[in-house]
Amino acid sequence: MDFELMINSFPKLINATFITLKLLIASLIFGLFIGLFFAILRLNKNLIINKFAYVYSYVFRGTPLLVQIFIIYFGLGQIEYLRSTALWIILKEPYWCAIIAFSLNTGAYTSEILRSAFQTIKPGMIEAGQSLGISSKIIFYKIQIPIAIRQSLPAYGNEIILMMKGTSLASTVTLMDLTGVAKYIISTTFKPIEVFIVAGGIYLFMTFIIHNVVKFLEKKYSY
Amino acid sequence: MELLSFGKTGWGDELLIATMMTIAVSITAMLIGFLFALIFTPLKLSKSKFLNLIGNCYTTVIRGVPELLVIYLFFFGGSGAVMYVASIFGYNEYIEINAFITGSFAIGIISGAYSTEVFRGAIQSIDKGQFEASKVLGLKKPVHFFKVIMPQMLRLAIPNLSNVWQITLKDTSLISVTGLVEIMRQSYIAAGSTRDPLFFYSFAAVLYLLLTYLSMKLINKLEVRYSRGY
Image (cartoon, rainbow over all chains, first blue to last red):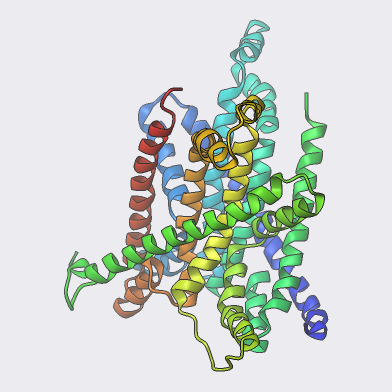
């Protein structure tokens, strides 16, 4: 055990943790909107719109996140047309490519979580709203969404933790996040166990925090 | 389409072999995972607090740490650990472990943690009366486990195990960082030499989709088989 290495690598790994957190928070926020959008599409009665949302979530849940990042980072740059548009400013940065891939991926999972949450809402609640003469828009925003959020909290908590682990793949597209820096230190010092303990400890600590925050929210919003 | 032809000019045969490799790694990893689950599920269910703690540590740490980090640990630390064990037995030569074994072991440990949780949940949701009944009938321990608990446990576990299989299958893409030539690595090589990453990575995505789709079909059949009588 090389304790000196562990202590020395700690500040470097903590710095890298901020990149991991930035990636996580950005992709969770975008992912939530994408997920909500596709969940609403899934509830649509139009078969084409419904199928489109289903295919989206099936493709993104059926392929590894690594493939998705590689398609966006290495693949999209190949299209000549894209390079001439303003989009290229975003797509040439590995940071934004990673966020796009993570958001689309977590969006697919989130849409499934929210869809099942919407479907478990008792029809009586919506009927009660209708018989009170509340417009369907307000029923959706004030009744369906709050209940769906409460229903999906436990599953969404798991998704946050999965996404946190997913951000480690950013290191494959040259980003120096927590895993990227850990790999760099391992490959220069050849002391994998020490670095794994420190980096793994930081990840576990984040998992612990997320787990407890979600548990707290579950309790707060239970009915 | 020319790129996918078989023979020297196309990548079809290479990608086919790579797909076989992905399947082989996934199955090996899944089986190693079952071995780990076989050890850790009893620990998690045992009444001793100490054994409980060991079981919980395993599942919490593995499920809370990114897969890639675990793979790096095995990739860089695997041969060192084996050499250390070998040196205790007086063997001091350099030992190189091949990427297949390192990779499937790393993925196996990860899938083992998920399998452990699935088996624990399944055993816990079996009706207590079943345990008591087999005790009252005086069944021997192996008979009790294989004829009473196991069939009921499998019925409950198979839907969740299919999720673990999907996770394991997708995790194998991460082994490409160790240089094992599976779908992802082969696409990387092909994309590099043809300068056509969009096509090859999209094709890799299609291959993974095909694998997950086909395995889902197969597992659904298993599910029907094990829920006979319900």
